[in-house]
Amino acid sequence: MAIIWTSDLYTGIAAIDQQHQQIVDYINQLEEIIGARQHHRVGPLLDKLVAYTFEHFAFEENLLEDAGYRFAKPHKVVHAIFAERIAGYRLRCNAGEDIAEPLHRMLIRWLNFHIKRDDMAYVNALKAWGGEGLLLSSFGRTVK
Ligand SMILES: [Fe+2]
Ligand SMILES: [Fe+2]
Image (tube, rainbow, N blue to C red; front, side, top):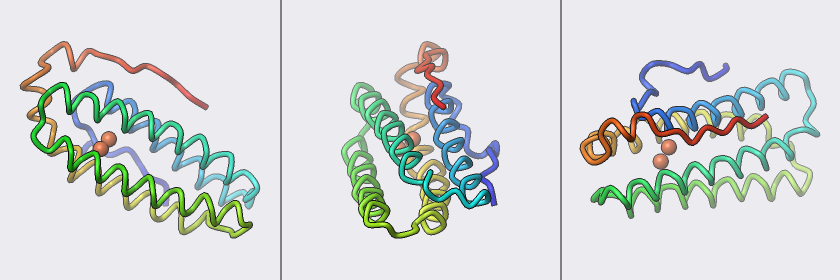
């Protein structure tokens, strides 16, 4: 079950949506790896996904702080909890455990839940602060 990018994942903030789509793309790549039974590719993909996701977190956290978003700190904590969780998967993967499927399920659940609940919660505050300029801003990085 691939994550299909659905309209309820759109925050309407271009740079953020672009980054979220890239993360979804990585999750879909993980599904391909599982389908192709190429589990040796899981570790390297996980590294790319983690690096990119952390970049996204930093981008989002800076924006929330600049905007004076009142839940900027708790949002950061939620990101940090995810970082710990994913580090646990990396360790298990390093130890030779096949984590592809549980990792895939966790990522789908986490991303859906986080975007729809936590990220959506800051959208109005960010838009009120950043206006059009924010909508047009671009992080603009494509990774493969
Ligand atoms: Fe977030
Ligand atoms: Fe996000």
